[in-house]
Each structure stands twice: as structure tokens, then as C-alpha cells.
Length: 163
Image (spheres, rainbow, N blue to C red):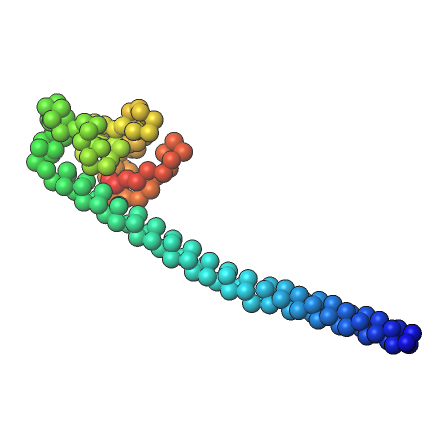
């Protein structure tokens, strides 16, 4: 009887060791599969999604710049605006350019330049800070004569602009 109890204990110990070995082997296979298959797969998916999101951001910015360019072109072709640049008519400013009109057009600043590139008028308002804003006063005449659009870092913030 003692021999059977000892044998049974030996078999249990061996089975326990075999089970522990199988569990350890399964864990090793699981960790290896995770590191070699699953993580790289997630990295590929994350990179693809990041690229798609970046493309959406670029498309949105391009559409916004195009809208801004269209608005600038419309104002540049407007006879009253052209006349204002020629004669500095204050009535034009009073009736057409205000913080409310800028807000309706989703603009923070609007400027009119003389042909030599000097700023004739700049009206702007930062709704977040609640203060006037000036973006174009630092430009020189040669910069203004070139057509440009895009993003500009101004006082720590990115601003969309078109000239």
C-alpha cells in the first residue's frame, strides 16, 4: 500500500510538472506571437490611420485656404474696395469692415495694401483674447506683391493667410 501511495504521489508530481511545463510553453508562445505578429500588425494599422488622418487634415486646410483665397479675390475685384485703396474713403471702412463682418466671414484680420506694399488699413480682432490683432504690419512691400497662401506662426499661434 505504501508503494502505491508513493507511486501516486510521484505521478501527481510529474503531472504537475508537465502541466507547469505546458503552461510555461503556452505563455512563451503567447508572448512570442504577441511581439512578433500582433504588435507589428497594430503598428501597421496605426500608421495607416495616422496617414489617413493627416491626409484629411491636409485636405481640410487646402479647402479652407482655397475659400480664403476666393474671399480675398472677391474683395480685390470689388469696385468699392478698389476705390478705397485709391482714395482712403473712411465711409467704406465704416460701412463694410467691422468686428461683426469679420466674424461673419470667419476672419480674424483683414488688410488693404497700397501698390507699394504698405499697409493702408488692417482691421482685426482676436475673439479668444478679446483684443485687436495685427498680422500684416510686419510685412514688407516685396512680400505683399507676391501671391502667397498658407499657415503663418504669429505670436505662438498658427494663422491661415492669403495675400
